[in-house]
Image 1: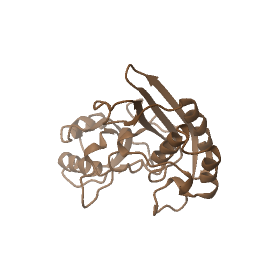
Image 2: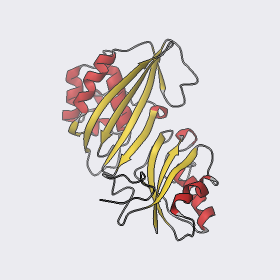
Image 3: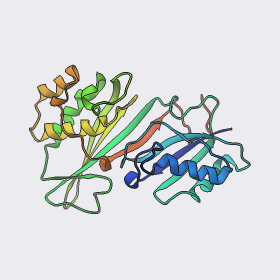
Length: 260
């Protein structure tokens, strides 16, 4: 039987989603928990990898198991075996043919930063401090250039092993909220897929544009030529969170997924 899991995790202490030899991963912790629950090693497949230090509000995974534990209780049984920085929020019987990775239609990431004269240690775990201020209107303006279908090779880490660098960004939006000590900014990107470091580099490019370090022509050329000389810096991982994964139907809402 295949089960779908909705998982949230703080990526601070992990080398990313995928099992690796030289560091602890989120996948490793989930598979260890599944071993303890089901009594055998069980592969846990996610909608996609997150990099070292990146968080997830709603990562979607699947696993195959034969168990007497009701589908809705698998989340609780796994959580008893997971560390505090990883939690299964929901578990359901997956619809026929469901694959957490291959069935995904859209993903939404959010990059968070805050502008302030001084660093706030309580904000630093999930967002990045930028000293001073920025022109938020300019940040909102430049994000529209990333919407649509583009070659994002300039925004991928050098040496990234991808079959194609073309991706579709359905929406690129910004939310800003002021507090007494800072301006908190959230950049939301929804697309059909993302390259390694792509969201973090788009966020850095928007920041550079807002601060006047990059002009409009250079941003346009980055998408036309794939030249990394025309983009901003890749922002730190801790500001990035996988917010949601869209499968074209409500996978968890009814307690048991039913594909239309």
